[in-house]
Amino acid sequence: MKCFASYCFLLLALSMGVFSCSKEISVETGGTGTAVGTLSDSLGNCKNSVVKGEYQINTQLNDSNYVKVNVIFSSIGKYKIYTDTVNGMWFADSGFNQSTGPAVIQLKGKGMPLTPGTADFVLRYGTSKCSFSVTAGGPNNGSNSTDYLPTTENGWIRYGLDPALSLNNGGTLDTFRTTITNITTPFNGNLYRLYETTPTYEALFFSKSNGKYLAKGTPEFDLIYVYDTIVNNETIEYEYLRTNAAAGETWESPALRAGAANGTGILYGQAKLKFTILANNETAAYLGLSFSNVIRLKREIWFQPDNGNNQLLLYAEISYAKGIGMLEQKIYAPQNGQNILVQRMFIKGYKGL
Image (cartoon, rainbow, N blue to C red; front, side, top):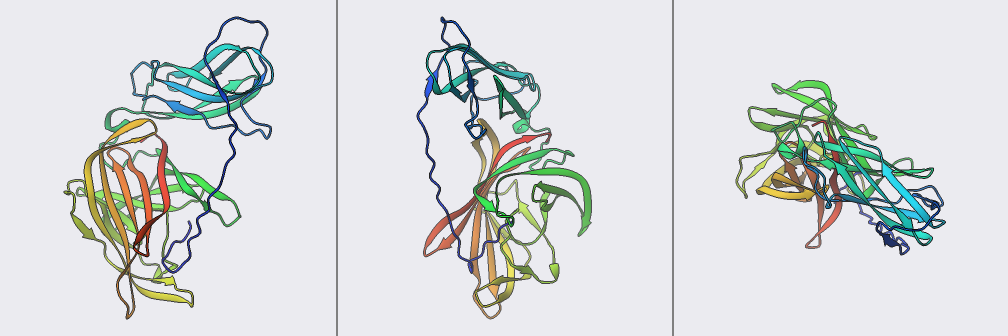
């Protein structure tokens, strides 16, 4: 993915959106005729739905479980908006709309989640269809795994990126998925499993061996590459997480030879990582759920040029949840005595862990 380095200029773009006002509609009675409307705009794009409430397996949905959806009515009358049934849940609302134009409809949640993970719902009104996702939790944060590294084949986590990454074809990437494969490879006496991303098809290798959480790769961030070259394509093994460490405990990865662009060519030196536990046994809110047993740490990328001083290029604050793995990664660049947030990666859904 995109390269970040202290030798490169980072351009951050701010985009402005224009939003129209819309009214919120509750169930109304009376009147005749059928309302005509659509879930999408004139370009056929769906607006984001807002999911509210906590969803726990084997727990009946109640008034706190609902979804706010955007509708554009072209005539008044009775309406019915509903979803299909997924994982034991569905959402629906009906009423009488008394005016035309944009409106917000609150769909009531019914049923109960049967299994943990993320369910994708198709929303229907008239001939239009849109979609949204609901994540249900449970024991071990909704995962079958009791570790911080799930290994169930075909399980996946979907992540969002802010800001979106620029692609070589001129497009952008704001969401990707990491899937657990059945491919394993030995390294330094440990067996590593391949975790593959789509649509970028990056390969990540992780292992839990003798109680240690290990990564096989280069001294960079997960999915974000810093160095322009790794000499001889070398690979190191390092401990990326310690679950029993106290806040303040630190450790480092082995170093390897790498190079980074400095404007006149490639500057070579030694690259390594430094880890510091910031907090453990925290709770964190994502996807409308409360995740427990969260460990938060700092991962620093250090580079010592040949005949130069060791320097901090970038660092990240990363949160890991039991049963899930990484929840969020915030990458910062130290510049002129300040720490500038340059990239945020955050969980948007998961299934089959």
